[in-house]
Image 1 (cartoon, rainbow, N blue to C red):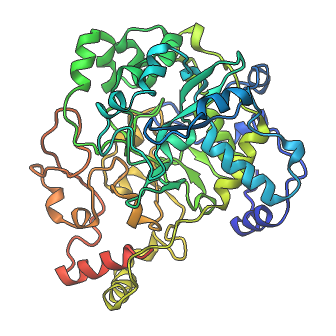
Image 2 (tube, rainbow, N blue to C red):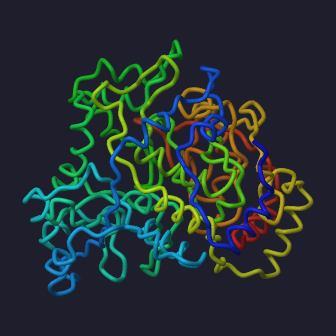
Length: 481
C-alpha cells in the first residue's frame, strides 16, 4: 500500500467530515501494518476480521469519578437516572468539527469494560474521602483542580447498575500539569494507588486469564522463540516469589513507564505522547506499526484494549479461554477518537526563546542534530537498527515488541514529557548530556531495573563532549520546542 504524504493526510483530516468510516479491523490493511518481530521474522498474528466483528459491541458513556469532597450533590443519582447511554451516535455527526468533538469524548470516556465493578467494597472506597486519602499521594490516584480522580470512571452498565471502572486511553495518555489541569494526549505522570478497591478492579482482568501470577507474567511478556528468554524465570516463580520480585526498587517515577501486554516488565517503555502523532510514520518506540493515517491510530487503540490475543505464528501466549475478542467498540467511536488525536499538537512551551535559547539553536545546527531530528517536527521519522543507535538493545531484540529497530523520536514537547531514552533511564536533559551516564557505576535518575542500584545508560554520544556553556544553551533551545 502506498503511504499518503503526511501533508495530504493533515489537509484531509482538517477540511472534510468523513463520508464513510473505514472498516478498521480489515484483514488486508492488517496484513501490511505491522513490522516483523525480531527473532521471529514475521509480524504478530492478528485476530481475523470475521473473528473480531463477531464480538458484541460495547458503546457506553462513562463519567468522571470525583473525590468525595468535590462530588456535586446528587451526582450519582443523576447518573443512574441517565441509564446506559451510547458513547457515540454517528447519525448526529454532520461536520468534521462534530467528529473531532465526539472523538474527544471517546478519548476521555472510553473505559476498560473488564474492570467494571459494583462491588460494595469498591463503591464504599470511592464514597469515603478518608479511604481514598489513605492511599493517595503526589503520584497515585492524583486529582485535578476540579476534584476529578484521574484513571477512574463511573459507568451505568447495560444491567442498569452504577459501576466504577478504569480509564482506557486517557488513563495512560493524560498528564497532570503543575496547575492541576489535565493535558490530554500527553504521557501520564501518575499511577493507580495500591488500594484494595483498585485491586478488585484489576481482578477483573486476572479472572479472565485464571493463571498463577508467574504464569500470568509469562503469558504477558514471554518470548518463547528466544532460547535465553529473560522472562522465562517467571514461569517457575510462586505467587510470593513474584510479589517479592515486583516489590523491588526500580527507580521508576510512578506512572511514567508501562509494561504493556507484549512489552516487558524487564525492559519497559515510556508512556507514549500522542500529541503531534500525525507527524509520525511509526507507532511505538520500536516502530511496531505503521502510521498511515487516522485509521491506523484507531487500529492501535483497538489492538491494545480489545483485540491483542498474543498470537505469534505457532506461539499462542494466552490460555484458550482467554484467546478471543470478548467485545469491541464501535468503529465510528475509534475513528472519531483517532481524528481527535490527529488534530492535537504539542502545547506551546512556557520556556522563553531568549538569547541563550537562540545560541542553543546555533549549537543544534552546528553539531548536526538536524540529521536525525529534522525541523519542523524534529524527527527524521526513520527506524534505525539497534547497532546504529548504541542504546540498550533489549527492548528491540528481546521482547515481543522488538523489531530490531528504534524509532527516531521527535524533540517537540520535551519540556513537558520528562524521562529520556526509550526506557526512561534519565529524568532530565542535564542527565542525558552527562557523560558519566556511560559508566558502569552510574546511578540512573529514572528507570534502573528491578533491584538494580547502578548501571550504564549507553548510546547517543552526541553532545556529551560539548562545553558546559554549549550544553546549557542547547538544553535551553530544546525546552522551547
